[in-house]
Length: 88
Image 1: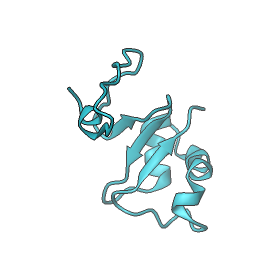
Image 2: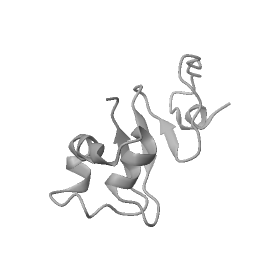
Image 3: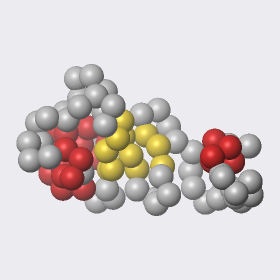
Image 4: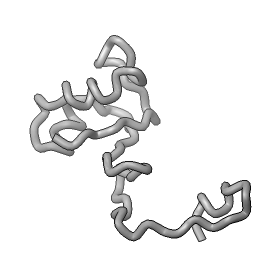
């Protein structure tokens, strides 16, 4: 029984979706297939891009996918923000 079973206000269990992979350290999966990442102390978009994509210059893709959350300055990400890591 998962957290969503407890949050379901109608008391109905939702079937488990076996097609979604389990989350690893620092990443989780939402209702879509997009990866997410929770910002930790010392992170930057280029550091996250380097770790996730193997190329720090791909930080622009992370920024574009999270512009509404981050705001106009891509250097100002905050610890605890959950960023979408788009497939590229």
